[in-house]
Image 1: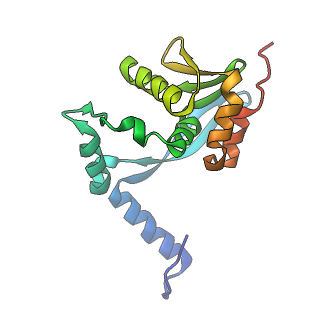
Image 2: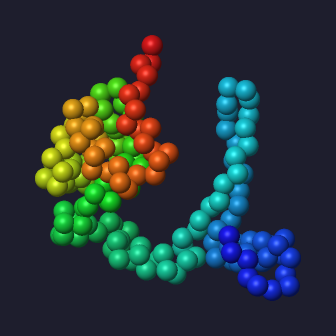
Length: 166
């Protein structure tokens, strides 16, 4: 984090930045969750996009009357970088390949996504339940070759062979 050249102490600077973020719709919160050793407390940051005009401009471009707009040129916009973001955000390793959890998308959007994977990258997929799109094990190496230059190193574990559940 950059601190401006001034006579403010580091804590005053952090406090000023915290106040700025709270006024812009970024608010720190805590949540709890069960772990094997008991209850754990997690620190989070909530981003309220309705208060950020710059993000609302994007929302109005992508939605009309609360309905998502998919541009006619979506196939040409779906690049290796786009695919890598989908893999990082929605990817889960699976014994028979890789799962992309797209449950928040409609059946029509998931089918369009699968069609783009086949036409743009030659990746065979199936869809079984709860909006999960499976990239078959035989195409997992091909997928890795496509997205590896754009993946964060922490997400490379998606391509390791998962341990069986037995």
